[in-house]
Image (cartoon, rainbow, N blue to C red):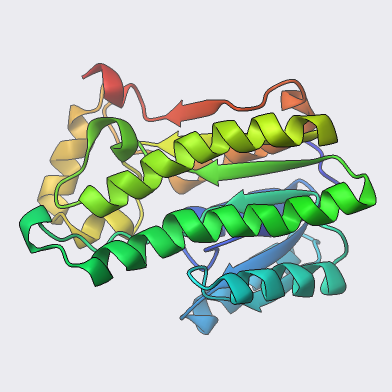
Length: 250
């Protein structure tokens, strides 16, 4: 899947699925902007792997919960790598908290990063595309939790349900500008995120309960994003691609 010459911005790319996406896009020939928040060493490691694939890269620190930081990040990427062709809204947080104990600050933190940040990052990228008359692709990361729920995750499930609806409406509004907007809903994936709520034995049991018998690997989510971002998906917009090993069937 050739993406030579394209510029991709991957948010939340310092680890996990985002890091896998950065590597896969680089292997396909794209220049990759690696957004990070609080682990510069991990982000540098991702950038090194992008460079080792022969691709250009740029590290951009930004808090996705702050609109001004998001807008500055998009401007920095375009100044450093060139116009953005593909945005992957991957940044997300999930600090688990029981619903009866959830406070306003818990809600605001998750919604600010997962929903507001994704919205205004897409807006900033799309504005640039529209102003230049360029087509483009936006891929938003939602979650299987938006459909099935997740323990101690009312705020998280609300944010990811919002990403689903936001994706469809963005697709409608941006279609006349030849900008496609799609979403990926990963199931249980072998990253640090589920380990904040489950022990290794519990995680292994959850993987075995999936019809295909295992968790997803980050690279499998990354390849789904590459497909939706590429010309191979050129007539697909407003779609949510489920990558869950049949998890919704169980």
